[in-house]
Image (cartoon, rainbow, N blue to C red; front, top):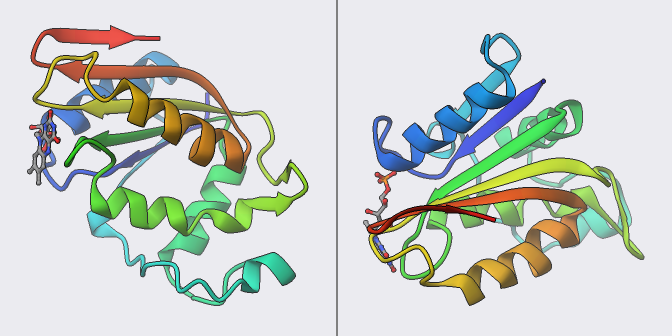
Length: 163
Ligand SMILES: Cc1cc2nc3c(=O)[nH]c(=O)nc-3n(C[C@H](O)[C@H](O)[C@H](O)COP(=O)(O)O)c2cc1C
């Protein structure tokens, strides 16, 4: 399965990268159709809130976020993996997610309706901690953008939980 992996930790051998790549292996065992990006290796400026994407397709800012958007559109599955920082996504992952706003076309329409999404969170706390934050991200960010959330995996100090 053509899989795009976006990792919001800069620790290349950390728990977020490890779990994300394990999951990617189950979706694409050969790895030949898998693209992995560490968000820190990309040039992605914060959303400037100009609303260009609300009026015209695309983004006013020309950087790697545009390529990520095209890669999401061209993938069959996307894995978004982040360490939990202060209860939610890491800053670099949140900046990238803000830049995905062009995917949403208004009125419930999206360029990626039904795109399979797998979320991975790693955290020091127990797996059940921050469930309300994850739910908010699932509903107001990822499903809002049009993703079909297949599974969320949480790795915490008491092991691993999926739902
Ligand atoms: C700035 C910062 C904030 C963090 N905030 C939390 C937190 O709110 N809750 C938590 O359980 N762990 C927190 N952690 C721990 C990380 O989520 C945890 O160690 C994670 O697995 C690191 O992933 P990595 O190995 O990919 O870097 C924080 C770590 C850092 C560096």
